[in-house]
Image 1 (cartoon, one colour):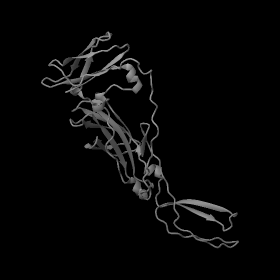
Image 2: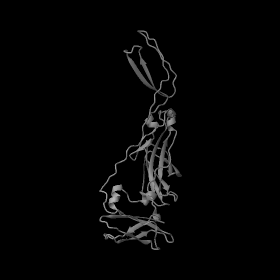
Image 3: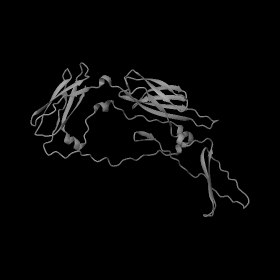
Image 4: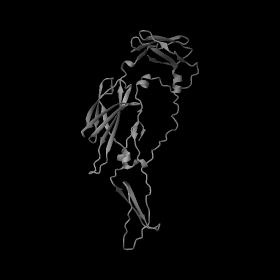
Amino acid sequence: WYRSNNSWNYEPVTFTKSIANGQVDLSADGGATVSVPVDWGQYRLEVETSDPEGPATSYEFDAGWYVSSTTTETPDGLEIALDKDNYAAGEVARLKVSPHFAGELLINIGSDKLLKTVTASVPAGGSTVDIPVGDDWGAGAYVTATLFRPGDAQETRMPARAIGVKWLKVDPGSKKLAITLTPPDKTMPRQQLSIPVSVAGVQPGSNAYVMVAAVDVGILNLTNYKAPDPENWFFGQRLLGMEIRDIYGRLIDGSLGNTGKLRTGGDGANMQAQGNPPTEKLVAFFSGIVELDADGKARVDFDIPQFNGTVRVMAVAWT
């Protein structure tokens, strides 16, 4: 399994090796019998004459129960869906499971560690499972649902499993702050720029701080700079920090295979310059840490030099 373009893909790998060889003498009007002990698996018998220009043939057969690696080593996809886009801590999330077969469902909730496990029996028509959202789930957690189906010897059917993964987002609630900047639309060169700052959501008794920057848009375009987004950094979707492993591949002796190693890399995109370098004095100010008052407000002043252009004002606040 590997992840590419925000989706999971798989690439089965099949190896072939020689287990026996020999020579058989045939008469003009008779045949011959070849007997070779085999284990479970898939085999190919190749027959050719001693004459390089002579006929050749091959025959493939299975020993024991055999299922293609694309259906055994690779899990089936399990369709799952949550009833809401995000949840508050303490709410109950409802997970809808739409399977292709009935079986036992194992739900693991995790981020960089296992947070919760839920089990349920799911009929072929599907089911809905309730998942209480914990207070310790942070920005969210991954819901990993694995549906197991036992094998059936009479139908020569191997055991199967299907896997579905869904991100469950937890609403940050009171942990999220809202910043309001009210700078003037225009200011004159060589004058002070006053920027009122107001932050909503600060809990009573908490110390709150803010950092404000005012930078020439021309400089930002040259560096392709993106404004800081602490909300997405702290409360955004995380990468799945756990590995999913099982031994279903070993049921067809998958230990004979080698783990694939993906090699990626290459040149990054060229810098997208959206303007010429400025010829006047550069404008890039940073306030440092400024403590807010009891009402969650502050004022930051910058001395603007001789400058003709547009300045972008950015702020980050925290408690």
